[in-house]
Amino acid sequence: MADAHNSARTILVAGGGIAGLSAAVEAAEAGFQVVLVEREPFLGGRVARMNKYFPKLCPPQCGLEINFRRIRNNPLIQVMTMSEVEKIEGEAGNFTIGIRVTPRYVNEKCTACGKCSAAAETMIPNPFDTGMSSIKAAYLPHEFAYPMRYVIAPEVIGTPEAKAIEAACEYGAVETDMAPRSVEVKAGAVIWATGWTPFDISAISYYGAGKHKNVVSNAIMERIASANGPFQGVVSRPSDGRPVKKVAFVQCAGSRDENHLPYCSSVCCLASLKQATYVLDQEPEAEVCIFYIDVRALGRQEAFFEKVRQDKRVRLVKGKPGEITEDPATGMVTVQVEDQETGKILKEQFDLVVLAAGMVPNTAGQKVPASDVVYDEYGFMVSNGQIPGIIGAGCDRRPADVSSIVQDATAAVLKAIQACRR
Image (cartoon, rainbow, N blue to C red; front, top):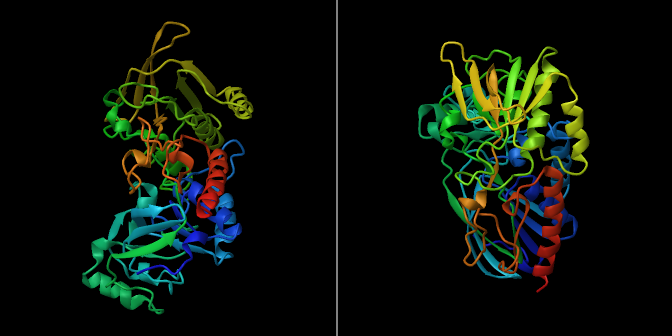
């Protein structure tokens, strides 16, 4: 199916996270048609899964809702969820883009009434909680989802349960016979904003992530602490659901390490400081220990670092743990580390250990489907020598915090507009 948009006035944005959202609304408000393509069934990406931003510690829903409202009110934006760009051909001002659409099995008639979910029986791992909780096979991705539309899990398609789910919908919104399809659109420029994935901490064998239930990544910690997460906002141990009192944060888990992730992701220190407040706010007698190489809190974030550090319940230990073990009987996690300031070997138990995993660009594993796109040795898109009209944005270019990503997305829009006018 060919798209009828004027390619010279159309910008395709690949990725519906904070970078893609920002780029889409800025381009549309500049008068350009926008096709926003997102592989998940909702917009917001990793920001939607967060508990709070730093340094204000406000929930991300407020910032996302502003962008969702801008999308709803702008007829120039076409949103395609559960979709991925498969090919990009042509040149700046005249690209032809092939998009693969995965069936949602729910159409635009959905009112999010929930009757399809009530008819479902099968439980599946909740993808929004990275599998830490379960959800029915007919589900709303989360309560703030945009679009506010249910999804039917492919696991039940073709079963009597799927027929019951379809029959339960009074609006004809459930279509269990949907099939994958391909769409072709024309655009003058492409903004590539597919985001990032946490470094796989299971690769660090001596930390035991994946084997020890109470050793988790910083990304998982956001879901653990979230009110719409598996523990309803109470920071708890994954092993048994018990609230925690003593938590360790291990910085540079795999980062700045030539054996794993050689670069610094720039936001991990601040993310751990922020997550320390989750524990401290929950439990007056909590103890937090942060094991670090050096703390990187640049510019205005220095004040946030100082605020957290001054809390008497927080200890900072300069040293990188050499081994982390877990007692299978109690679930307590032991961290062994050399304190570089005293020279002593510390061996201490914690309820929970959070590993600060770095940011890996999604372009490291899934390249832009166009020839001659340039990447650095870590998979980030390189600005110099890039194909004219294909512009990287956000964490596809470099690790960054949310505010920096929004600025970068706006800059990408300016480049895209210039490419459309070639």
